Image (cartoon, rainbow, N blue to C red; front, side):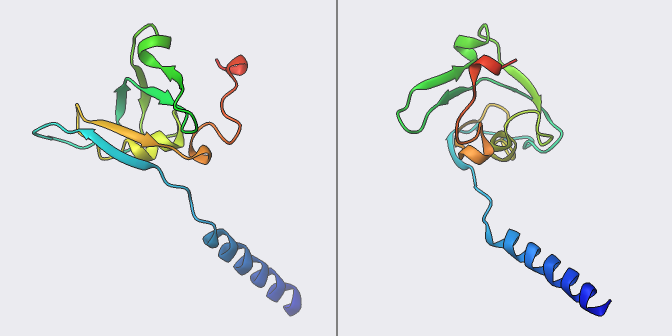
Length: 122
């Protein structure tokens, strides 16, 4: 029984340590425009209304734009609850109203390594 318990503890420890060694990918944030006065910064749970353009890093081609593909309308989502990309949840926290940011989102926090299949988009 002691050997079983020891193995279970050791397995749990190794599992925890191996997860700690793999770094979480991060979103690169570049502030392009900031308002003169910021009364409040965004936080989890805030309702966001955003226009965006998505470009591929490898060749700079546009893959989506709310200005072109969403009848020119911005999109709504709640920040921090995975209604949108994980990269947006990370990269849009701490913004001021009217601020513009450029986010470079790694695949693990975006659409994944293979990208988004437009045929299955809803």
